Length: 158
Image (cartoon, rainbow, N blue to C red):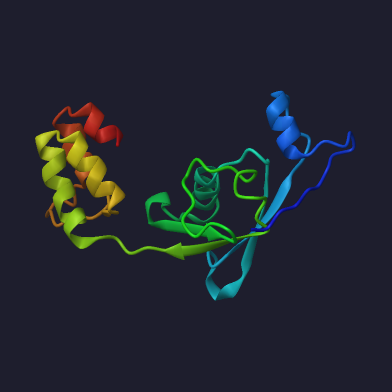
């Protein structure tokens, strides 16, 4: 496990700041490898309390990579949870990105779940991960269109 025991000007580590509940005075610089084509790495500046879920959202904002097909890992954790913080992960210096493929069967079930207002089924299929933008319809409607048109608000929000 990779640990950086960097301290701020006051001599506190990021964990000390997190325990005290005050604003963090440190940044963690993390290199994300594998997310950019051609082998380039992406350098992100994060807070110690930043989560892997936040890293995924940043990759989505910067590169348009859907969070459901991102698989992130780092030294010390091959499958971190979205709520794991940089502190909990031991301040990884590098995060590795792998793009998952959409699962075909889950993708095909999304439209049916949208039509039936099945939020549990929709959630499972999206996490498989199913492609929320896939359609076979002649009018190119996606599962989101189907749920919204039918007034299935909770299903559309997923």
